[in-house]
Length: 516
Image 1 (cartoon, one colour):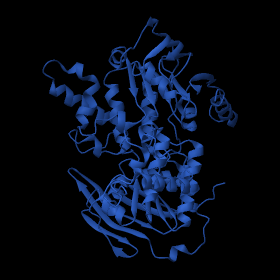
Image 2: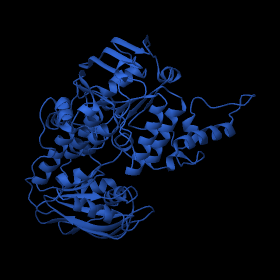
Image 3: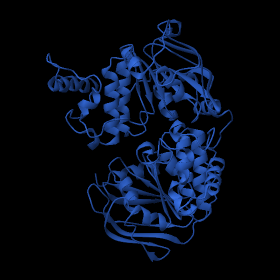
Image 4: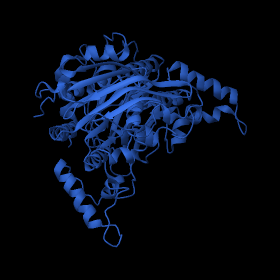
């Protein structure tokens, strides 16, 4: 059982702060990212850092970690001023950070990734692989992580790669650990495992800064909570004194009584008919049959390994189909390539924004128009139309950016996701395949994306949406397909009290385990 970390001895507020970030300012061309922001971390505690996407959370942490140089303000560790010039400088001084988007050398081993840049060497200067293996095993055993240090890291699931990255941070023996959306790819059991690791570390005096949009997690494990908005510090309060409603109000500056927009979409005739659908290469989906109607939001639930992502990728032509029939408006379609799928009116928003979604080194304009480039003429592209379409994406989806020429990598995760959605909306698709569309996105941006999804359904589009968040599926979907080990285990129909009956969630979980 995980103890609430706020249940620690009282009186710690009187102790000196392990870390103080005071009046931090940071500006980029056209935008002030941080405006007198502050954070004060106590040793042996979990300090949650919350705010909408674009609130400045990641920028503040990058100033701490030496990725950005601050324009003004002061950083103190144990009361002494510090100013890290690089991430390596921060790591050498006891500050480690696990980023939301993983940066790993996928073709190298787990242990090489853990000790990258600091390989142990023998007396003659050769890499000491035996020591590297032993040291990796020791860290993994301490944290109860069951991963072979010699395995190629690219062959691991995203969740296991996330745990390896956490172990790497711990291996630096850091006194301050920053975790940015660490549970976004973890199963429920893995989340519990992470929380046990965090409890172990705080008991050893480590201070943890925990960035997450998941309210239940924050209230469960945090001691203190700092909330930011528009680059400014808004409040710091003890977690036990907060409610979800209070956190949301402080984050967005307004009351949000409804987590989901009202559903006004009407279900029409069958748009997509899928029969005995299977992928070719394992792991994949097998003999899946369902119908997607015009105006319907059809959810896809299942445990990690249920092949939900494989189902979407095979429908989109990214993975090869082995068998089955797919008809759209009564017409057979193949989707043997992603380009063919796009021409057939399909759009796919992938699970991993950074790896398969954005072109990080390119502008918002490029990222907005790239899927619709055929519409801008050949061989010369129509610059005015590209500018107009990008402006439409920024305005209609409320992307926070100083300019359409801004590199997309400089945007928050939520704003990156909005650009990706806008990119595909420009292609005017009939079927939207959404894989974890709100992963790592704050409550305000989530609401906006839910509204976008429902607006598309109201226009008669068909939406097939994978999500690991049960409240999300129950909140906006009309029906839910439940996948289990590559097979369709069942379908939960929307009823009068859909989403309000605990029994429905139990039914979904039981179906998810049907073929495991």
